[in-house]
Picture (tube, rainbow, N blue to C red):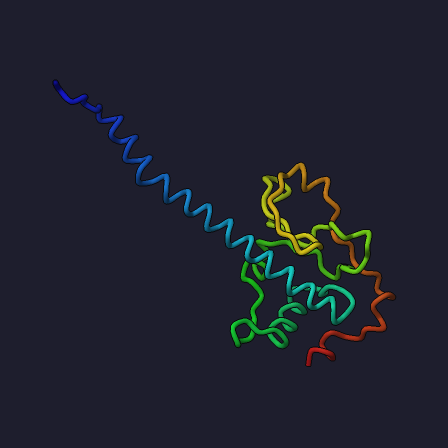
Length: 160
């Protein structure tokens, strides 16, 4: 009995499926894990800032100053994730995390989310995958009115 023979195109397809596809899948999984990690870290950093100052940070520089000056990870100064610094993760700055009407609001999201879906960070502390259509319908974190946070003082003065 003769063994079945494989055509050259079948062999190429088989090699592609066994060698190339797993690496592409790993790359996507790694990118997704990095995005989720960045959003989860941001949720913690943003909430810690808001607990002290009564509002979210006004911009990435203010968040970075606070995180590097006040937070630690494994005994070292914590860092703001590079995806946030680069703008690959979009953040709703100066948000009011204590407003009950914003309890499920989006705090931050991957830049691609409005067009293609992806991960978002919610005011609940949750990080989840959403479609572009779901994202469009989700409430976004609104800024805290300026007069409401005047009594909390300047973040630079408190962090230093």
